[in-house]
Image (cartoon, rainbow, N blue to C red):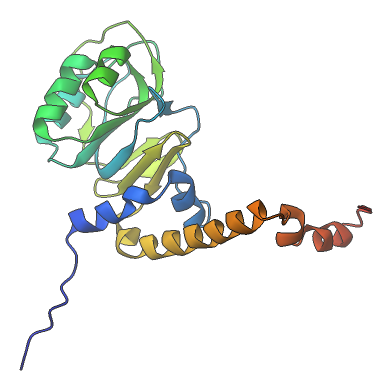
Length: 223
């Protein structure tokens, strides 16, 4: 009996399928779930996050736990840090970013602040944060590693997929990683057809059936 040549894609292969999927598309494909608070933004336009989450929780103004996360995270992962939304001290900077690059870590998502933003941009380390602050932190209190965290209203578990771009960040639960891609791809194909027809002269009003919606709401519109 011959063995099937089809094998289950590795996690890395599954993640790479999302390289062309926007955060907004993944959010919509999940039924508008998983979005991180829009106040958490990339340090510079063009930065992207794509990788598996390694979670940690640090005390505000303290980056002790973040240093441990840098030591423990595996290549290809993204450090996801709940810093309590505290923005008055930069818990992560260019030195830590250099370490992350050396460890093969693909980015940082932090509900808190960072500093040395210009240098992190220069060395190509993507960071999405709630703020930027020149003030440094202490190393006094240890938090948690690899436990669920809340980042901008979104619950993140170690092993979830993080997608971030200029529009924002979405969290894809680990269980959905193998299958959500097909939904995302189908949605993008539909939007591609929409854009083509719109550029050929059709209107969103007609293609989305908004006349019927207006009539249902007893809104009288004459074109």
